Image (cartoon, rainbow, N blue to C red; front, side, top):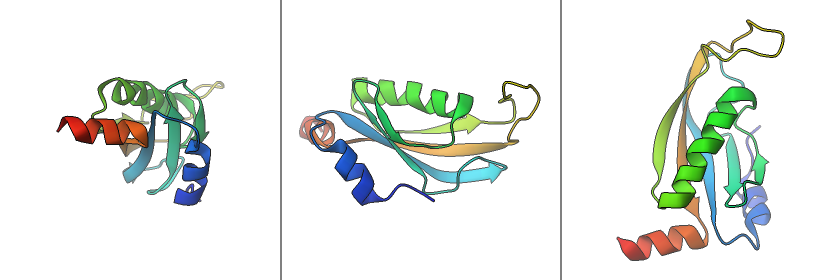
Length: 113
């Protein structure tokens, strides 16, 4: 079940700079479905999930870049080679995640355009 917009807005209250990562497409086996969201604040704190593990770590890293630049981006997360602690159990798919600024960061960025 994806995080609701209301839950993410509630988590973002008082956060001046944040991004939302949303799974917009999947191929093959993935830990979360299209629509799953994660809010990432400038201090690195997050709410929600796009699946955990190495894939989510990749999304988090890209989110830090979007926080820095204020520019949204679409990324492909390759889960074919994502191995768990016991080794060998990869999800076997791809997630396409759109990462966009929200709140004051989005407003600041729109003033630049």
